[in-house]
Length: 134
Image 1: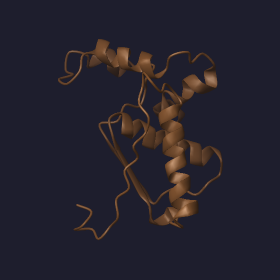
Image 2: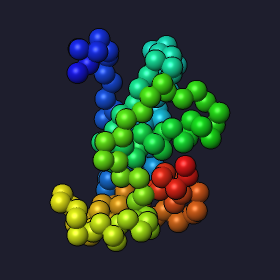
Image 3: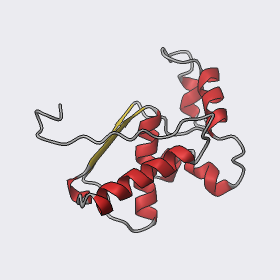
């Protein structure tokens, strides 16, 4: 895909839970964006970010961080089946729980607990549900 688009691809090898709980993955995502823009002189207006599942949630969290700090946004974002609410508090989780084909709700909750271990303050908890900040 990158070759056909004549584009470079940069993949973030972010740290994973449970060894590296929140906000490690988000910190790594922000550091990668900053490195591309500052150290590699890539204009944000020429960047597109994409993420699948947890990576989709991280992509949205990155966009929200950039917006909150009045920093330039990338030109585009593509979120593939993103995990956007690790609090699992939306009505759709219950409404769709029997339709989920890949993971059972308990598996999602267990993964979120590994990632969000020790997160108590409201600011940090809000960053676990980036869909709610839109």
